[in-house]
Structure formats: structure tokens, C-alpha cells
Image 1 (tube, rainbow, N blue to C red):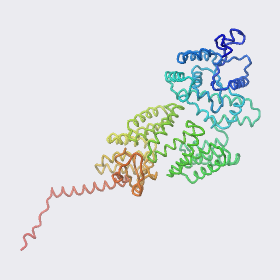
Image 2: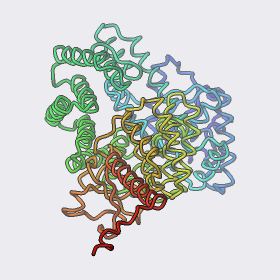
Image 3: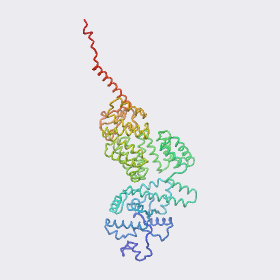
Image 4: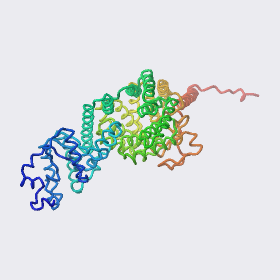
Length: 619
């Protein structure tokens, strides 16, 4: 500023007026944060020029030199916003190239500044070339961090346009209005920035691969790039097995892959190597999902013990998550919640709430709250997860759509029927246009039927649920767990209407017989809120609360009923439901007895018996 005070011009204009040969049209536009040290920016640009073989005559548009700082310091910020935005757009259009300075690379200030985030977004919209510049020291850290893809996820988690800031408050308001005007939204801006940075990272890895001369170096960079897209070696064998397991292929199709892959990784890398441990926990998780808890829990607990021996090991919290999930499946909610809460709190402190692993653990914690009837806590965590999923994937993607469906379930159980139905309708639209979420439409119908049941619209509920049960049977099979769950809720809706004839009861008994659901369990979806186990025998439900929201098994209700969130109704007034097949058989027996009694009465009326008068006429 002192050097240009006599002319009251920008530095570029000032130099041009005296030494025009030092000024030329810009070839690159620099995006940086004003909080950066000037020499750090110079170091980053100098390193960038060396990497890209740019000569000393390469010219850059640098806002602090190109913009008139005298005008900035004296003008009304609101009035100047349009001027600076236009200047930036023209510079970006003219150069067609943007280079952003990242420092430190894993937590760059530029991605926290609204102007900088918008600049990246605009570079993509205008189809400009996007590059990244780092100082020598930061570049070395970046290359080292590329060996662990979690570092990339951590860096991308810092991108959040909605939480970005500006030095001038009115600039933030104006930029936010531009984002809204473009109808792309903050989540859309974030996705564009994600894409630009990911593309640059792949390019940076390709550059390292091209420069590598030693085979081991080439393998290292190939492996780093593979972490962005595919896995190689025996790790790939394990992952192939995991994919087959998640696709519900027969066990013989994936179990040998997991067994052989893990054995080879242990042989080559050792049991304590990070790749081996990641395979171990993935396999343990699959076994637990297949209810092979002996093998699954053994692997997960061994993995946790080995990882805890290493200080500052982020991977341990992923293992805690998988163990927490498995413990929930085994109804050990206390230990599960303790592990998950520990992992979640640590991930929030070290990586922030938007980090991928943090969000994943958060979602599992929400499941725990749901199982215990803590619906408000569950909805809060799920809504946060959903907002981040929309920001990353877009609202129509399968990940946020599944989460929104879960939110609708919680809202139904909380009695928020209008909200639940609105969210289900949105999921219904998304599932129709997403081939990978084909079954989503079926679950939407199921939830719409449950909303109708919860509202007491029994005719509508039974109509929807019976049709949905038929569809589930065709899609999953009549004896599949999911089909059985629809049969149970369809039965509950019909139960309130009553079973008017033996023919109706026989029809329902046939359904339970076909579904192989003649046992005394109420299914996995209707667990007791106290012991968190599937309810066996009689189920007790609060009639004052939303249907199915407050339920206990008989032993928990009789022994020491726990306090339930949002329900202080006397448990002696709760409605008791017998297992479906048992109740149907009892109803059939009662109808038969009633029919027999009615038949006898009718016979007496139609054919009166003669009166024995023998005693009356006796002498």
C-alpha cells in the first residue's frame, strides 16, 4: 500500500504505468486465503511452477496485486461486492486456469473461506483448469499421506460451503445468495468441490507414478491410486469375498475367498499390518452379519486388541463400530453403546462431525437409541447424518434416501405422522428412479401402511399392508425375514378389525404356515425396549402412545418395567397381545364353540322336545 499510495492504483496498474514490460496478461489465477503468510504463498507457487515446468515469465493474477487495495479500504463493502465478483469472473474466463494454495494440505484454510470455495465451484462451471499448489514441506506431507486414503477422506470432510466464512460479513451473504440463485445449493457446491479435488489428487498420483523409476516406488503409487478406485493383490481377493457376502451370494461363493485372502495377507504382511487388520475386521463383520458370532466376534476382538497396542491409531474406532454393531445384533446394548460412544466422541474431537467414519458411527448410535425407544435422540443423529449425506451425494442418491426412510420410521414411532408420510413420499419418488434401490419402493409401501395403522385408519392400513405382503413375497420369498415382518404388521392391523369367520382365520393361519412363522416370536423389528431382545410369547403395548412405539415383553413388564422416554402411562393399562398363531387358534376355537352353541339353540327353537309328563301323572 505505501508503494502505490502516490498513484492510488493497484500494484499491477502502478507498475504498468512506469515499467510496462513487467506486466502482461495473466495466465493463471491464484486462489488463496488472506490469512496465509505471503512467503508461504510464494513458496507454493514456486513449487507449482517447478512441478509443471512453467518458466519464469509465467504470469499470475493475484488479487492483492490486481485489485486496487486503496478502493477496497475506503469503499462500501456491499457496493464493491459486485465489482470484485465481476473482476474475478473476467480474470478466470480470460486465464481459463485456477490454482488454489492449500496449507496445510489436510486442513486448508482456503476450503473454509466462502470466496475460495465459490472460486473452485465457478472454475468447474466455467470449465477452467483446476490445479493445487503447496509449499515444498506441505507437498512432502501430502505425498506421505497418500499412502492412507483415510487422509483424503479427512481432508474432503473439511469442505462445507454452508459453514465457510468471509472477512467481510456482507460478502458471505452475497455469495450465499448467488449459490441459492444458481439453485445448486450448498450441497451441490460441495459436490463440485469434492469432484475437482479428487480429480486433482488422481492426477497428482499419476504424476508420481510417471516419475517413479524403481519398481517398489511404482507399486507404492499404484497402490495409493488403487485405494481411490480398486484394490489389488490378496486384499482384492478379500474385498471380492466381502462384496459377494454383502450381495447375499451363497456362503460357498465367498467364504473360501475370505479364508484364503486373510491367510495370504498374514503370511506376506504379518498379522499386525494395517492391511491385514482391515481385512480381519471386514471378515469379522461379515461373519457377525451372518450370525456366525463365534468366528466374527473372535476376529473383531483380536483386531481391536492388536490395534489398541498402537498409539493414535484411527482404525481402532472403526473396529469399535463393527463390534458395537455385532453386540447390538446379540442384544448386548450396554456394551455396544459404550464402545460406540467412545469411538464417536474421539472421532468428533480429532476429525470433526463431518468425517466419514464419524458419520458412520453416528448412524449406528442412532440405531441404538431407536432400539431403546429414545426416538428424539435417534432422529437428531439421523437428521445430521442425512444432511451430510445430501451434501455429499445429493438428495436423490440411495444413501440419503435410505437414511430419510429411517427418519420416517422414527417420526412414525414419535407420532409425527404428517412428517413421516411426507418423507416416505420423497423416498418413493427417489426409489422409482434409482435402479440400485429397487426394493426401496416396497419398503415405502410398507411404511405408508404402518402410518395408516398408527393413525387408526385400519381399512386403509390392511389394504396397503396385505398388498405389500404379497409384493414382498414375490420379491424376497414368502418365508424371508422381511416378508415375515410385513405379515406381522398386517396381522396387527387386521387384529383390531377382528376376525369375523373361521374362513378368515384359516386364511391367516395358512399365511403364517407358508411364511414358516408359526413360532411364538414377534420378529426382529418388534424388540422389547427393556431387554432389546425379540419378544417371545406375549407382547405388551401402551395404548395411549403411537402404535408399536412403546412395547415390552412380559418378563420385563412384570419384573421391573423401566421408565420409557415419552411414556408415563400405568403399565397395568397396557394392551396384551398373544403370539399371532396362538391367538388365531384360540379365536377359531371360540368361533367354533359359539357356532355349536348357536346351532343347538336354533335346533331347540325349530324342533321343541316333548315334555316328559311321567312324574306329573304319577299316583
